[in-house]
Image 1 (cartoon, rainbow, N blue to C red):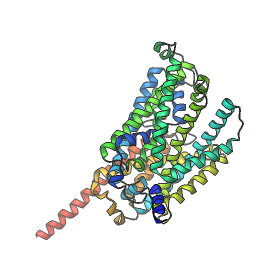
Image 2 (cartoon, helix red, strand yellow):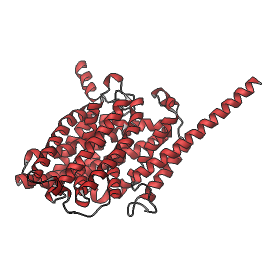
Image 3 (cartoon, helix red, strand yellow):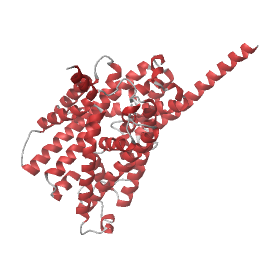
Image 4 (cartoon, rainbow, N blue to C red):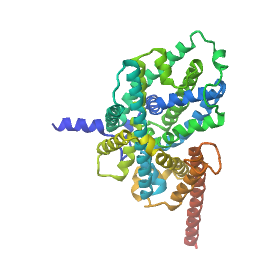
Length: 447
């Protein structure tokens, strides 16, 4: 009985409040698969279809590569901190923002991500409903499908990284095969020139706006990168997996989806798949891809809550968050909650800029044993967080933001860069003051 209990504990053990042991770390190949599972979903193919509909093919390729390259850099920078410390995003933020500052970070990340879990779950339910209706002529209530999806996604998030990795190892290769097979089929009998020179089929886009859409779609995922990279064997593995996942995987999916849209004169990739006659297997793969993305939202949400509710097991927090997210999806979170989620999401990118900037200037501080000696609140870093978040709101177009001015065109990237720059300056000033005080004390001793 004791051995069975221990084995059960080993299954759900996820090191949410401590560093991941070195013998549990993974190489870049498995980490890359997890990243691709996290970022490639129905929403990614929808974005690629939108790019294909609103841009020329050459412009769509350029936007995809540039946007994904920027996301790769963001993810790599944040991932380095996770790999070096072995800690989650919420715990990493404690070094820069203080104990209570990290609680605020945990609340923002947790609520934002399980809110987006509800949004994605709502998309899952409606997509599965349409597929069952079109393929099997089964009219199953989409709310029931939402509940089923919520249970499945909560199960893998409940177990933690191990289950997410196993599911991704199945889903990612299958999705890759489906996209390549679809590409071959739609290009059959068509020349590349014909596709490249095909007319626009959607709302016209600019390269700059498209890059901003790509960055905005996954900026939060890059910022909470330590939740995944804490399992990296080395910083090299964390960096390579970030580039393979974002620059390799995500850009290829966007480009293939854009080509599919161009070749079929349809923006909706799910409709394209149905039109190609792939049937049940293709639809199940697309749904599986949605699953691997959404369980990551719940997983990171539970990691955030674990920092606040220290005496509550992570699996209990995961189940609770999954239940709330599922209820929100059933009651139409998409129509009623999106502005609030966008508000919360604007608060997350500055967190990455702060802890990356602080880490680069104070690497020795970032060790698990130092967590207990951190300030309750780092006033300077918290102030930087507020300022950078305000910049995000000011560069976000109305009605979700103030739309006062633009910087890079992606408000999340704006907030990261502002927070990163200000934190570097603040950390440098702080170091100079400490050195001056130390020099003065040494001088006094010598005298």
